[in-house]
Length: 265
Image 1 (cartoon, rainbow, N blue to C red):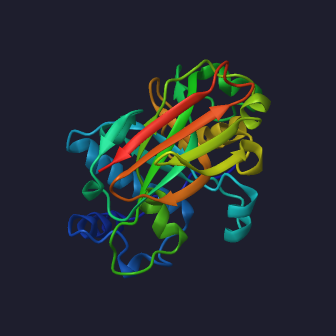
Image 2: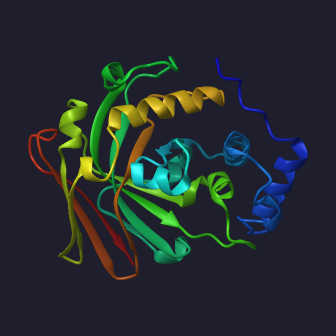
């Protein structure tokens, strides 16, 4: 049985929260100072600060959900990142680019949890029973300022660059195989900039959901009804003011093509 993660010292959490309060999301002392479990605990300390200020959890992201990303890191890990409810947007939203520092946009599968998942050993053949719907989605990423270029664990403390998500209309989840067969197209101002199949870019989505449940459980958290989960990027592009982004998902997981849209102004 694996040991529970070692919590970071109160001093370390206090130092990080103080740096964030000053706008430094990657303080130079953080690089090399923590392992992955400690980085996730520090991320949750940041989340708790948001919750104390009146925010709520909107959902979670699963990181490193492709063989290529894990090979680049050299580790078989799926770190999580929290998504704030205030930054969980509906399709058709308009967002001021000034709200995000150096934004980028990714196409992702977006799941909505229907029932709390308390079993950290839940298997891929059962996890979708706890999912209410799946939708076309975008992740909005932000390159936040810092005094150093963050290493991987420092990026984990900063939610793996997540700013928020955009979710389209959901449908009941199909099988994992059907989800992996989804074709995704992405348009910027009406021009197609990406077309691909889920299985060529991301892991089996049911496996990613299970890894998230397992990782959250190690840190005393569970997936709650209504929370949204994104499970890895199919494509990523920088986003600029004056751009309208639309993605269309089609295939056996969707009875008719599903889309998601956002305008950056």
